[in-house]
Image (cartoon, rainbow, N blue to C red; front, side, top):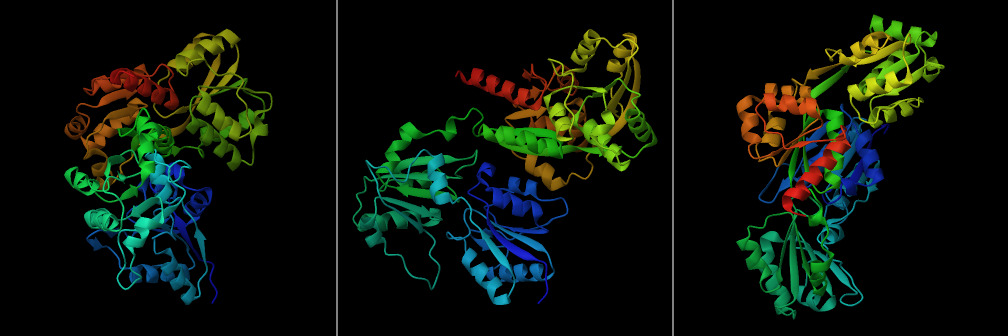
Length: 511
């Protein structure tokens, strides 16, 4: 049989996107079709290519969207179509993930497959709860078992398990928690043995319930514990009081709204997640690069002839659009020759370096005012300056440079548009639950959010939320929309905004 397709059976890890392996990322980003489970963090799907087909086959505790046989057949069908298929499974596919059954079905069908191990919840979740599974003072052996035994399979002997190891980790056992703990006690473990139930481990919604083997089931019932959760039994649980770390991250547990274009929303989400926050990305904007226009082509040709003394980039999008124009004309970074280049901030400068250009000037503050002041200090009287800008951007910078004696050529390099294709489901998922902090990086993102969702809905979703803005211009726009701004970043970058939010949270929490 001739085919170009392959199935990658990939472990997506226990939830935290940062625990995704490099090989898993590679498979996700290359896949034509991604077939994913309930326990896969949907934020991981941001790494899929735009054309990838996404198919949900999650198995709910009390009902399945697809049977295992249907999933097996779906994998075979897709790969026989010549597709690169990523079968994305929570945790590790070979640890209670039925990955072996799926691989066997693919083997029987004679189609190629590869197993990509993932970080398993059995050790990652306890680690995020500050519970080591082994410790030379308390435990030198571990058992990992499932609390949901498959019918027809080999039955677990809880009595032998209770006496065999120092630490017991039970996955998928929430619905049978009372039965499991009772069997372990009957097997010889003391009811006073330390126990912990970790719900939604490694995620900002992580919750740890501490008790004993005799009390943990009732405590979990009282607190309304839900799947997914991991039970840890053993003296190592006592170390959590000193080793707890994840819940101490400054943004832990907070739902933080990021409303901007898709790519930069995800970049900002990574910063938020690194500090324990739950990033709620709402791509209200889309960027349209205007690379193939007569004015952009003329600007590129003039640059290559040495016409300009300076090129000013005010954003990453301007860099991308202009280099796209150069490439369309068969040019590259050599077109800049001795022309000097100014970048409004570190992010823009970093994008330039990716294209082979190092900025000659970067203002101390990442604002157009600071850029104008810097260029005037350098001396631009009589200089010919190419400025790549967004459609409809203010002309203040160009006017200041012209007033200083420069000859400024403004060229529209890109357009920021409202993302009308944003689905109702995406909007509901973002705004249906309370937002703790809302981060805004531009007036256009605010305008777009209110236009798409409506004033009443946005005001309701952000009621009581901390409003954080990247700079004073954005803060002024937020106030015009009726929002009370709590944080204005002094460093007008995405990282500066997150840093300011963290400082605000620490102050208000009294840390």
